[in-house]
Length: 79
Image 1 (cartoon, rainbow, N blue to C red):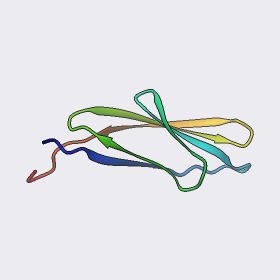
Image 2: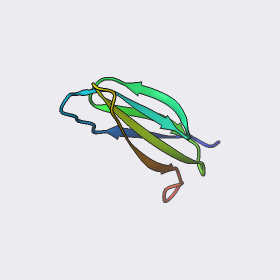
Image 3: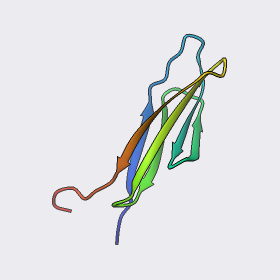
């Protein structure tokens, strides 16, 4: 049995006019929108599958900035 591994992505978004929302996209699909600081999203990964997580932060005027991270799960020592 393959057990999924839980990945948690946390974004530290700040802006002088405030952050209205932070979106979490996994492999090009919007998975979660967070409107409360601390901005985070957790999801189950599958062993050997690559994930590209893009986080988009929007300020109160609609301006957006984004960042991407590559997530990959693998077996640890002794597993």
